[in-house]
Each structure stands twice: as structure tokens, then as C-alpha cells.
Image (cartoon, rainbow, N blue to C red):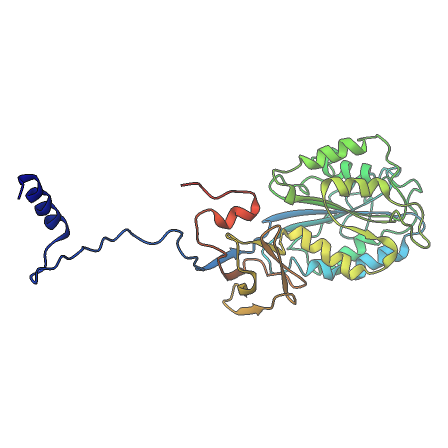
Length: 356
């Protein structure tokens, strides 16, 4: 046998191996897992804390012209719907009231005294806002907001708001506005704003509020006014106010609805800084989402899909329908992840998987 052939046979036997019975065995090589790998659906649990704004200043700007007696009474009587959001929450709040009358020197952006007197001889008499130390706050606020209907007929709500929180912030209204607190304003009027450009124009006021705090969530301007579609028995639509709300954020409410409980409830919700919407960290298998809320005292509550909360595919979030988790409650969201492949859970949001 030629030498080269002997070497070839020897090499083949060395590589393949020889069995004792004279047969040839072929070793099994482990090349790793198959490609592509099979999909898996691991469980993800997001635990999200419901927070609040630690401090909040809220200014009501209330029309006190001749047609506003019922509206003033509605706000005062239903104030507990708003106050309930603050009681026991730990929120440090100031709630003040000014009128839309910029013609009367005793008003003109000056906060109403808690005893209901608009222009006492002693400017330091009584308080100028409701806070957590106010005794019987419901009655005190009621006396502040029911200011009568003899105010100037030319309502200037925007001018009154700006004067109250800026021009008089260090004098007549000193202490009401705090640099570390959220600022929320609600105008209640059955006429459009007549402030014009003094002391600040509408666009300037929008810019002023937009930069008032470091976070947009800390500032709102709500308009409880005549809607553009009109209201029975109401004067002109409050378009000047509505434009500010559209730009700054807040709620809009038709003043002719007379549903003061609901609107004050919403104002309280905005002021606390609470949220109804909670974002998931990964893309879920929607049918597997489970939501429960753990109260600060440890009590756990289960919430049902489409009844208590809904899922938004666009925002990848769940939103509570009616009830809102209490301050400092934990929202526990458990679900199966749509895919465990790196980057694939983001594919539906415009991020392509990484190419290997």
C-alpha cells in the first residue's frame, strides 16, 4: 500500500474514531441552540407609586357682577367636593379668592379675607386664604366666595388673576404664592374677559403661566365660563379664558350646567397632582394584564379591565376610568411580555430590532 494512502486512512480513523468491533463512530458536535430561538413570554411586574404635589396654591377668580348669585352659591355649597381631595393627603395647600372687579380699589386682585370682609380698616385682620390649619374650612370658603353681585359690570378676570399672583404677591397678598408650590387658577364667569392688554395681554399671560414653574403639571388655568356653543341665560362665551386654558392646560366647563359637584371634584383632582394614567415598562400581551392597587395601609384592591381601567396601545399605558388611586398608593401591574427578544418589544413603536 502506498505510503500516502496509509497516512490518509490513519488520519481518517483518528478524526472519526474507531470502535472496538472494527466499526467507525462519528462524534456528535454541539453547535448551540437553534436559530431563530423560540419565543418566550416572561412575566413583568411594574410597581408604580401614586404621588402628589407637596404644595399647591389655588386661586378662584369669581365674577361678582349682578347675574352671579346662583353661581357663587353653587361654588360655596359644593366646595367639600374639592376639599375632600386635600384632607388627609398631606398636601400643603392655599386656596384664595378674588373677584373680577378691577375698578374697586378694595378688590382689584386683592384676596378676600376669610371673614368675608372685602376691605377691612385693618389690612391684617383675619386670613386671606384657606389652608390645612383653617377651622371649619367649608364655612370659611363659603363666606369668601359669596361676595355679592354689586361688582363692576366690566369683568376683568385675567387682570385680576395676574395682579393677585404677581403684582400684589409681595404686598397685599404676601405669603399666598410660594415658589415651591403648584399654581392653579379657576375663573368662574358668565361673561367674556374684558382685561384688554392691561396689565398684561392674553398672549403675554399665556407665556407667563407657561414658564411659571419648572413642570407643566404644576400649573393650570381652568375656565368655568360660557362655551362657544352658547348657554341659556348666559352672556357672551368666555373665549378669552378658553384660549388660555387651551394653551396652558386645565379643565373647561359650561357655567350653565349647574353641576358644581363634578367640576369642583375635577379641580381638586388637578390640584393634587394625582394621575389616572400609568405607563408600562414593556409591551404586554394585553389579555394578561392584571391591575391591583395597594393602599398606604397595605390593603389590596383588584381592578377589572374595561370596567375599572383601559389599556392604550398607542401610549402603552393603563388609565383608570372612574376611581383614582389614593396618594402614595402603589399601582401593581402584572403582565406577560409580548416578546423577550432584545428590542422586539419596541418594534411597534418605531424602533427596529438590533441587527446581529
